[in-house]
Image (cartoon, rainbow, N blue to C red):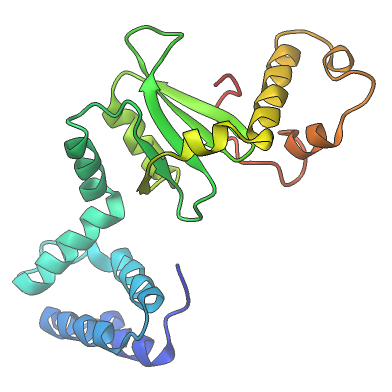
Length: 218
């Protein structure tokens, strides 16, 4: 959740926990709670809170609540977001980029160069590529990227980072790890000792970047 819901807002939402509360009362409580929120973060927290309950109300006989819940469910599942991304790209996501809400991890969609006919979503940050997923359709890739937290559209991130020293060094390190995975000895690949850069990007080191369960072969 973006931030804790203020007590004054939480008090209005207590009606949702009442077993005999009418659906109209629940709708009115949520509407009033949104009016009481004083910042975008509070409204975002309120929305996330309601999304946890929305699945119970998307078929409500009280239509205002049903419509509100339907919108919340679509947002919670990413359906509206994914449909919008696909629509704007006419179904071809080649070159489309997404980022996480922290704006420090990114995803780019491209045809897969190693498996003709298949499609790839590669993940990267300021230290280079760190994983990818290959699927048959962009819809599948987009759904997985959204699930992994890439829920904001962006552009130009790969071009911006690709010329930086950190990105180049990170990719060089990734290539060396791939060589080790292919059978070369760690010492022969990384010389006599692990460099500071290697320690920083060692995928097995504490605090390393998330692998998302994907191969380092990007």
